Image (cartoon, rainbow, N blue to C red; front, side):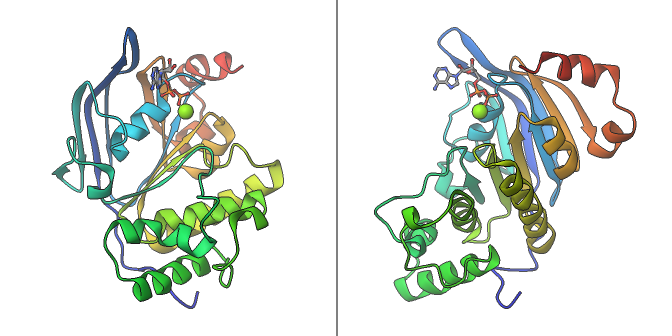
Length: 248
Ligand code: ADP
Ligand code: MG
């Protein structure tokens, strides 16, 4: 790799403490507590509607918790807006601005943080190189394939070298080959850049191949948190009962 956003990132811890979120009468998240170590890769796994996105959006600051606390790097972020948290986010449906060039899309978070234009260009190009799209900065999103667009979204999420990368089903819209390619790409970035990852998926196999630990959500409640290795070697009855049997 010729340029890096940073290679001495250690990642920040994340402490989710008794998090709850209700929408009207719906308890989307119900008393969830989870501590994630610096540099750890955790998958939030559960069926549709189990509260995965709401947990992630609460960590990111796009949802305001009904109760509970979010600490990032030991700092209470519960009331901070997303741009005041040390996080990068990849959304479920890659959300590039169609009217902005690839480079301007990637540089957008830097603009939000008041970084000067020349520096924005330099950092955006470095981030594009990291996702192997160096030289694509002047293209428009619609000129790129789905997988390339998702890599642009990834570059945008890591452009300011966040301590935490949050991803909400980032690969579910991709076909199988692209998905496997991107799984490897994300693991490589994690190993190289060292940020802490929370990765939402409803795909058990994806969680097993990617994560250090898997946190299983069901109806807004945390069922189980286990090392992926343990689940590989000895899938517990609880794991099976709490998730596998309920996949649609
Ligand atoms: P998942 O990501 O696991 O599919 P979500 O966190 O999106 O689950 O949703 C959990 C529950 O909260 C679901 O019942 C969903 O319908 C509800 N929900 C999520 N966001 C909203 C919202 N903005 N308004 C009302 N209900 C919501
Ligand atoms: Mg979701």
